[in-house]
Image 1 (cartoon, rainbow, N blue to C red):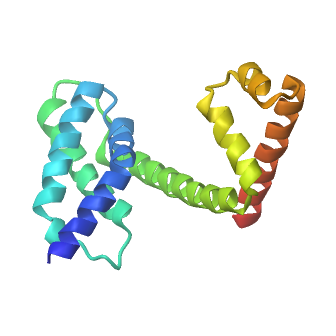
Image 2 (image 1 turned 90 degrees about the vertical axis):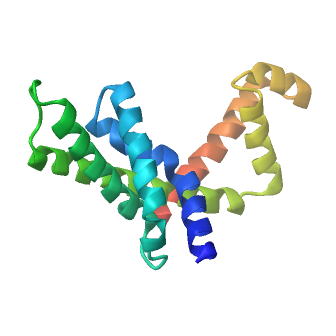
Length: 167
């Protein structure tokens, strides 16, 4: 039982941004979305023992979030013009599919990054460590800045092609 809850906790930490983004698409006011997120966290915590590790975590968590969005909207938006449940369900479905696609692309990106040579991985990481200050990085590496730009462009293009092949 402890391993089930620890895996739910790990999965939650891994996907907490996805869950909040999902809620934010359905509850556009950030303060309201944070309230719904907190309620979703509590619901997930209370029901973590019900999670089946054979199922995907994100759809399970999104189900809790969607229920909390509906509950919040019923309680707080009576006086305002609001979307009906069918529209909310449609938005939720689009958001879920987008999150699922982005997670799949992220997994492919990680695989593609691992396939790069150590030198290319290092150059790419250095470029991000310098936060776009490539002229400074080029000076440290003692290469022309245009050469650095071209190398990084080739690496990024190869990553994109790798992701596209993997889809």
